[in-house]
Image (cartoon, rainbow, N blue to C red; front, side):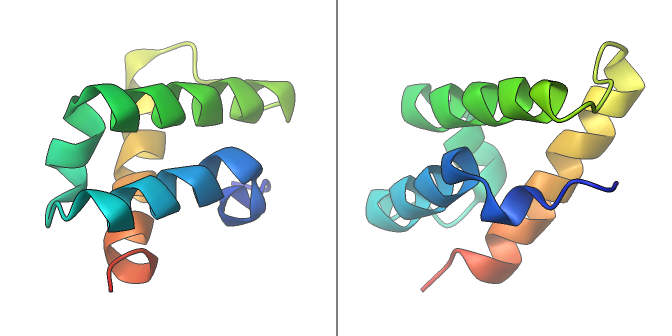
Length: 76
């Protein structure tokens, strides 16, 4: 992936919300309303940056990369 999503405002908001939630699992956080909202915004930004997330495999890969990054960078 050429786009550095960790610098995107939606990802930064996602990380902040994840930290504040007290949730230990990024997957579970993304399943709730606030996490899902920020992830949706991030996917829209990704599409605006030229990433094709139109098929399920691409979207799943992107989501897994976001989850891995959240668990590595966004936990206290």
